[in-house]
Length: 475
Image 1 (cartoon, helix red, strand yellow):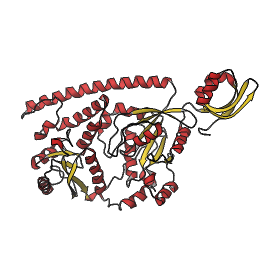
Image 2 (cartoon, rainbow, N blue to C red):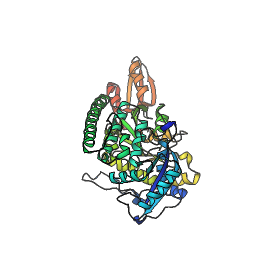
Image 3 (cartoon, rainbow, N blue to C red):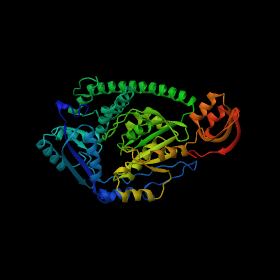
Image 4 (cartoon, helix red, strand yellow):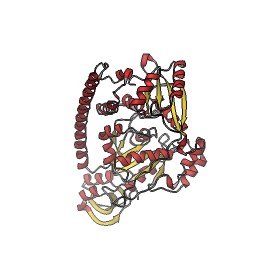
């Protein structure tokens, strides 16, 4: 689907197919407004903390998941993010999945009729298809067939701007396609990228596999070079004590808008899913005058393809190395707890779930007074929470103060100093990097009561007269 939205100069028309397993025992949830209120009053059992060998590691349990209608609504947004036009939507309710066609022969015939009558260019399934199911559906339907993972991979391919992002997406696409080569038929030509024309027979198939495997090996080598460069850059950053704070969260939660608000940057912010793929780093000054590097990262989603998590390892290293994670959540979402569980599932896979977290409840400007009250009064979970609106700027000062409190590297020290008035560079460093609580002039000396990072206080230790004691960030 590399040319979605541009085929023949127009948006491709897609038939969406959702699947609802009716024997799951899970009843349909209330309408969106009711779910929205449930989202601002989470239940203890939604996320369970499990103690590991060190007594501190916590893991996310499986999300109860979206119901079929909500899942299809999310899938609809994915299609729009890919530039597609929705021609029709179908829902198949079954007690179990059909191993041959996923949805059953009768439903396949119905889908074929709808696709023909709506002049659809492709049929998209909100479910992963096995190679056999994909082959059978392509034989039975009058247009191309794609599953959920292929759609997500296509959106990633559209939004990758840097060479690194393009390498990561191509690797994920090839690793997903390799086991599905056999019997792809008319879809074989989708792969592209100089792999060559495909023909019938085992010899051509094996040739294609070898070419793809060689390309995969080359991409892995190129990405390892990227990781080496990123490690070198990180080592240079670590030589200067500037900790990293990473923004993580579900796709379209508002991470890039928040990043722009906090840093004054102008990275792409879009309501479309996965608008951000390439990591961005910008410096932010906290109320204590300590500086941190804020990192904007790729958004997560339900059933994020494992090939993407693996391929984007170089990008996600910023999450692994960050000192603090800002989990940005859409407070207006009707299924916020499910989104939270999916993000924590990926963080657990990255072994980053035990890092210090701050939950940033974004888009509070979209809530009414009753919902805001419920959000403010609910019981705190194991992480501190801050309500913000990246769109209006509400709550950003409180967020910076919360980061200051959680930050543990380069701790704050409250001390008294006497600095000669003639030492302008020391006084300038104090004014630039510390919070001055009191200032008095004693002849040729300046007496100061300050709080500042240990690294800067240590550089000016010859002027220290008495330590008042450790200062809480923002005190």
